Length: 299
Image (tube, rainbow, N blue to C red; front, top):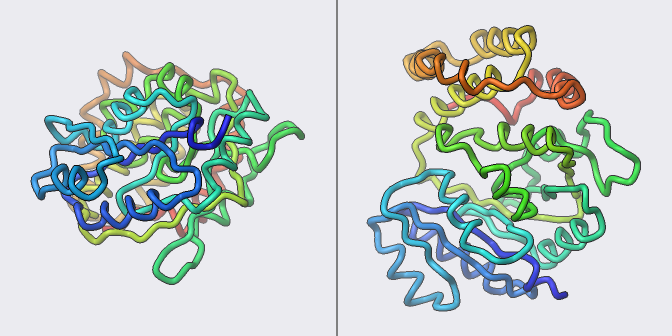
């Protein structure tokens, strides 16, 4: 089976027509010729017309409202390829990387996701998060094709489509901002392994058209929700206190904590503590998370 028949690419976008066009040109030039699906979050800037005119081979899933990261769920359900590669409208896969990811997933049926090295454009430098992925302290079996991970970066990852859908995809309440963490641990609890592959590459040329303040608010809130949904009380309290000490002391952070606390009844209903072996992996990640320069809540 060839690479383009194994992998479909889902791009979630909203009102970033010009940046999306650059991404589609890169993806359209890949030797794999993957199926490409744009999950459009109700753009108002002519995104859909641009894709139809300039990229007729690209499918558009026209969503009626802004679903945030959940657009990826809709896109994954619309594909029939065994593997789904996500990327943002400001990132694109390097030639051969989709085939490389599919090969790894073919060879290792217990691996659910493969995360690639992220190269930041226009200067071609590695994203600071790459070092953390490469040096992941999560223990894994010797047959793993790369370092084991505790989570993944959606915009740089290829996943098994069936496993993604069976797990429910990204949780609708999280919407956008650190939404991967909850899905990742639920996949791990089901016995799957997540890995990093240094020989695979995705390029990221960050768009300036984003609300960094709203993204920070959601990121802090979602981190707290994930923590109390899945972690034991001790580690959850420790991570909460660390967040409270390290996030900016401003209105955005206060709103994030307030929103997180307001959802306490939902948290109590949905709370399901992880198996001990998965919790152990998360504890091993805590020192790297605290020291990380790539995980700061800014904006």
